[in-house]
Each structure stands twice: as C-alpha cells, then as structure tokens.
Length: 136
Image (cartoon, rainbow, N blue to C red; front, side, top):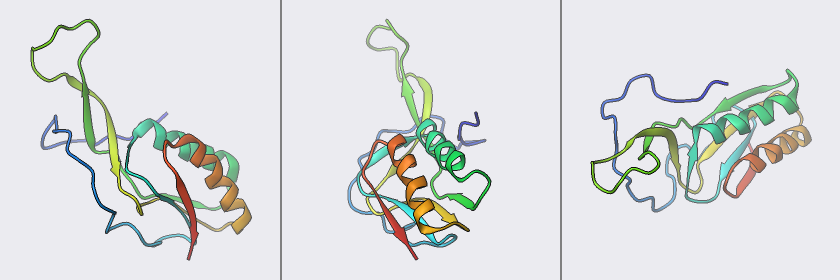
C-alpha cells in the first residue's frame, strides 16, 4: 500500500487553518473525459484517497487511465494516548488534502460513461463527502 505523503517539507508541523469559500483552481477537467468533483469542505486523508483509487482500479481491470488531482501535503499532528496536557504540539500522525467545494479529485479516460459512473460511485463510498460525476 503506497500512502501518499510529501518527500520533503519546509515546515514539519502546520497550524490548523480554516476552510472557507469555493475552489477556484482545479475545477475544470484537464486530462480525462470524466471526473469526480467534491461538493463539500473536508480534509481528505491519504488513506481515503488510496482506498478510492484502489476501488476505481479494481473496477476498471486494466482498462482506462486514472489521474489523481489532489495530493495530501497538510500534516496533522496527534499526541500519544495518556499524554497529559501541555508539553507542546504532538508529532505528525498523517497527511490530508483540505478539499473545497468544486475541486476535482479524480479524472478518467479511455472507458465508457456507464463504467466511469460506476467506478466513481465505488470511489465515492470510500470518501467522507458528497461528490458529483461530471464529463467534458
């Protein structure tokens, strides 16, 4: 299992931040003919992206080409269990992608529309948000 994470980072720990507004980049289909678009604010973890990717690949069975349009580069920290208050920020636990509404998550090319819809339906079941199927 290949978990997505950055090779090298400028800052090891980030602040939480707030997600507001709609996506203004990554909203158009660029590579494929069909796409899966996120419709809510959410942090999508590397594990969720990988699970959705595997669901699509398993359904396609060597047909078509898949592009992943998001990359989890935001570090999320967590303190260990039974660690008392204080003592600073915890260690990096996993990485997420802060998704805004309208952002394209996956793109597909080289298959029929019905197959693409079904593949994206399986991927949606692995993601914690509402999504929308779009075509060029």
